[in-house]
Length: 147
Image (tube, rainbow, N blue to C red; front, top):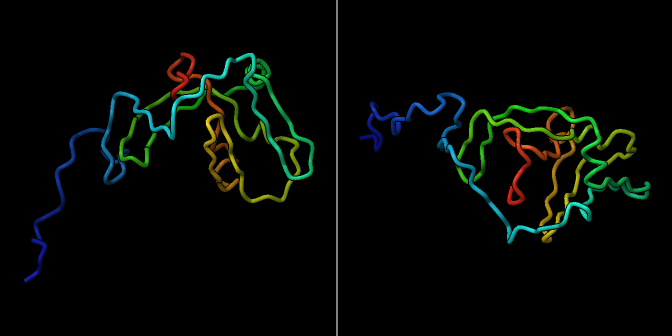
């Protein structure tokens, strides 16, 4: 006898986005925060973003300079590794492609560092080609520091 009944197809899903919600995810209408520690509060006049590529000269932008770069409006669904999904979010930010324009490197991965000591590495193929942005607005308002 099979341990699974032929008629069992899993728990019924709420009508919360249908196929836009991956299996095992649930839709949320708030905006959960997943943090590796306390939120850093760097004053914007001291904030900076930089790109370094091996021996090449680093490129750096202040907050004001970042806001002067060409920005894009992005509409996406978010699917967090902690199992929540937030559908139809709207952002504004600078494409990673814009920030890497003119950077010469044969690197296949990027290493990201941030205030508070958190680091992560990502394949450049996942960041380029219109796949990633440094966002500073969410739903038409400045992004809250905890996000």
